[in-house]
Image 1 (cartoon, rainbow, N blue to C red):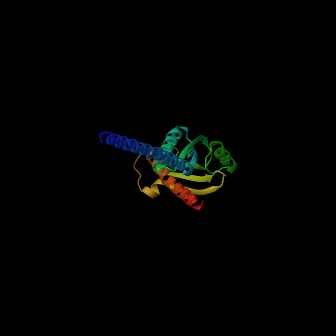
Image 2 (cartoon, rainbow, N blue to C red):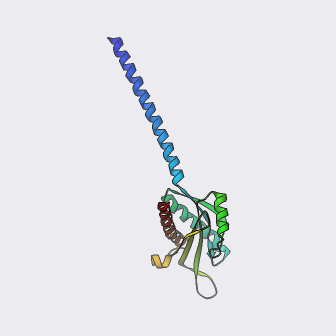
Length: 191
């Protein structure tokens, strides 16, 4: 009798252990499949350095830093898009579709964003920067076709004049990106 109980207990333990092992394997496989699906759904967006106006060397690096900081923050909220950075300036008003196509091909990007940051001149002769910043963005697909163009004016949208220029670049970038990402969602639903 005691021997039968030990045999039954051992059999049940082996079966339950085997079932737990199979369930763990299935969970791991499902997790891997979910990650692969997310990677297939995620879109790679290539960002070029923004065209900064006025063309002053002193403001380029802080503006680029604020722009890419805001872009990465905004895209981290939306886990379906991957930010790629091309350390290249493409003039906002003179975009060549063949150049966009080539960069997208070389970086395996699905979309490209060309942007500009425009500060406003206050005063006579010297640039004293106000907090009014306009961030413009153009979204292109990998074939070099323009999908959308948007501008975000920090003064018209926020009605504030106090704060650092860096914060206003971030606000403008996030505002313009919101419109660009909305366009991307519309593109995904069409495909």
